[in-house]
Image (tube, rainbow, N blue to C red; front, side):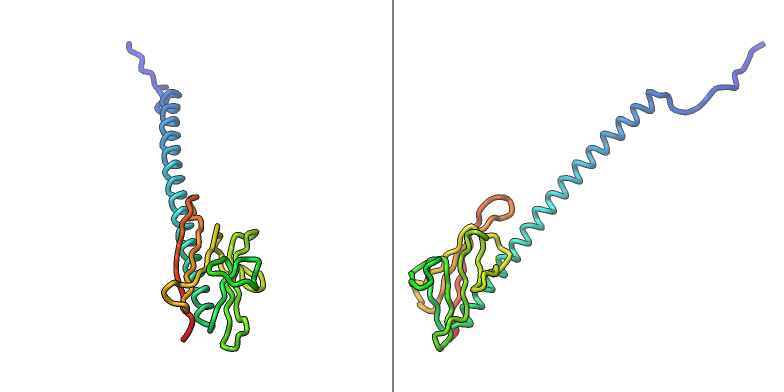
Length: 164
């Protein structure tokens, strides 16, 4: 007479369970690496967009200040009283010769500040230079250097004209 065993169990063995866990761990580690790469790329691009906004704001602020004046004087900080052909300070004057604006390099804050010492924009600059345009005395050329967010310096140039 043959005996039939009814106590046979179904399921995974310990070895099968360990292999499945190991494969699941590898999939999770791979997915985590992809997420980290995507997150880092997003942060880098986000920083580049913020830098572009800061640069646009800085150029617009300088341009607006120059356009609102009737004359200007360029100087080298901290010698506000000594005009220069090029320098890191710019004073704007109205038609009556009264100073209406001041923008100058502040090395301790690494930015351009106004007459009250407030930052003109959120840009962290490594340098700024103002100079009179060679072709037109009513034009102010300005160039500045900033970090591109990836650790490399980027030099930008623009100009603005006094109002007529």
